Image 1 (cartoon, one colour):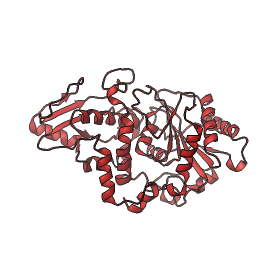
Image 2 (cartoon, helix red, strand yellow):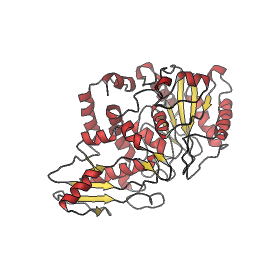
Image 3 (cartoon, rainbow, N blue to C red):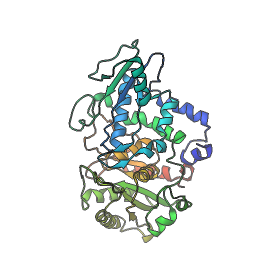
Image 4 (cartoon, rainbow, N blue to C red):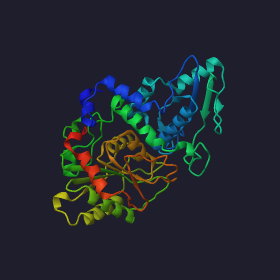
Length: 393
């Protein structure tokens, strides 16, 4: 990644590649144990392949926490597919630079770990309980089968374990630095100012002809994930949407809001698009929330037909990201500190703060927030200042 591109999306001073790599080590040393070929001590996990990208990302974080706490190196396997969501996640590793990150930190792939285990004729041992491996033991190969039972279980492997306290927050700086160094999610702006002003659908990120215009400084992009999966938390006419809009109206001031609704029905191969029922209701609720403002500031609500790749990039590049209880926007906020993230309580609850982020806004299921509106105004202003311009400004 070039120094110039880094400067577009990082509010800090321009940094060279070597300095950013040094920063990566500092950000990741507390969550990652480098691999030692002379004394291999490895832990890997079987990702729940029918779950969504956000859920599988959580599984990686849980395994990282367990491996570090036991002095084991984590053998990384990219998230590539989801049987339940019928999505292809192969592009995510390149977008986020994760394989490059683990390699640079002295990591090993799951494939190489399996080969090493085979050559040494060692056995994979299932991780169980809190039993630790003696630090002098070598040729340790441990695995975690998966977390598909985590939603309702209090098993120590799961969301509800005290061991997983603040797991997202502890990993955020590491993963965000990796995206800046090795990922492509910020290579160019996914939002096209001409399309937004005309109210047209936003094109695919691969179509470079549609991405030659930066966004005007008075436009604020709000990407809103509407959960359409296995647990539909809010119907199109749910009053929680109006409460969220009321909060937005009070904190974004004189910026022109463009609201992009993103969601997908689980178990389908449709693009990440939201039905017109949601567009119609949220548009009407937005008009009411902005009734006392000028026409120039009235929100424009759209529902782009995004691919998974574009949906993830849009969430990472947004000025404001509204969550839904789904793990997908949670993952986007983990990998990007660009948006002000409204962290809707997850369907399994806030357990030991596992999925909380220090720079996010905790949002109740009814759409209300406990944060000071003044603090949120300052957070919005800080993100919109010219000195903090990202790739889209």
